[in-house]
Amino acid sequence: MRLVSPDEARRIAIRAQLLDGSATTILDTIRRLGFLQIDPIATVAPPQHLVLWSRLGAFDTAALDRLLWQEKKLIEWSAYIWPIEDLPLLKARMGRRSNKYAWERRTSEFMWRNAAYKRYVLRELERNGPMLSRELDDDSVRTWKSHGWHGSRNTAVMLDILHERGAVAIVGRRNGQRLWDLADRWYPETARIPLREAERLMAEKRFRALGVRLTKSGWEAHPDAVADPPPDRITFLSPFDRLIHDRDRAEALFGFRYRLEMYVPKSNREYGYYVLPILSGDRLVGRIEPRFDRATKTLEVLGAWGDTSRAGEALSSLATLLSAERVAALPAPK
Image 1: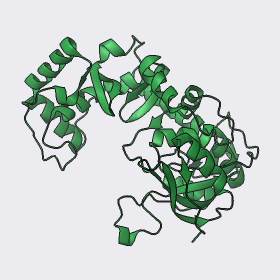
Image 2 (image 1 turned 180 degrees about the vertical axis):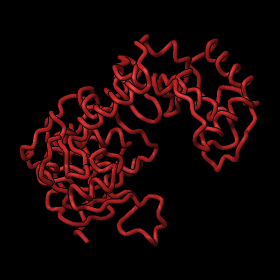
Image 3 (image 1 turned 180 degrees about the horizontal axis):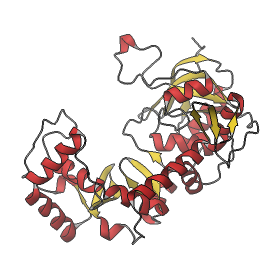
Image 4 (image 1 turned 60 degrees about the vertical axis):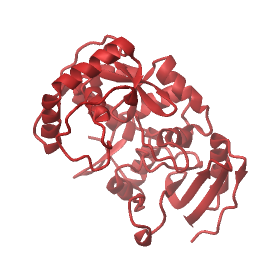
């Protein structure tokens, strides 16, 4: 075990996550990070775009779509974008079954009650795929209350379960909606890897991508970790960025408490709805709340906190990514 000081751990984490300016291409960046998280909230830009922008600067977002849907060097599974070479590891996860948790038991019951509907969905995709969810009829049986996530239709529920289990795949987007097809027609043949081995390999990939982990003895560095001070570059971080995704780890590394307040009532928010940490060199120095008005193509800043002295540099780059035609003035920090 290689233990490092807190200062070294912080530098290693920055470099391991390619936030030191060393990122080169979209594909190589995703391979190094391991995956990109997808989320529908795009107050500024989709999280997968923001995470890449933090490392690459303004880039061609259409190139990400080409890697996914044309070149097939990336795949979308379980709300993440993965390198295609990780498909054998993902297939091991797709094949696992458990009734340990309530949601797993609920899923099993849903699939048992809707065996005929499952056959219908797979048959329609085989005949007519790729298809949108709304193009499939719905005569299934809901076995639990929706709570609004899937509305009154069960088709999305069935497709999501079949997707998680590796029977269907997301093969594109049409007006932002997912296109579905049989997985066997989309995924290439791969070697079979036992689940335990797959989990071991994925844990190793995560450790390498994070650079350091906090143990009872202190910060443990990955053998490939580099602790040199990173260049003094400025950027903003998506709330879903892996550098800060584990909020407690981020606080231990940077002494910076960060929480996404999107689901906090407005009157109870300490900062704002969609606030991004500001990374300068190897420090989190402040916060900023940008918002992109797509109707007017204006990049606004609703609030700023801490050291925003160089935030204009990152805002200019972000405006280029968004093709913004106007950037509002940066307000004085609060």
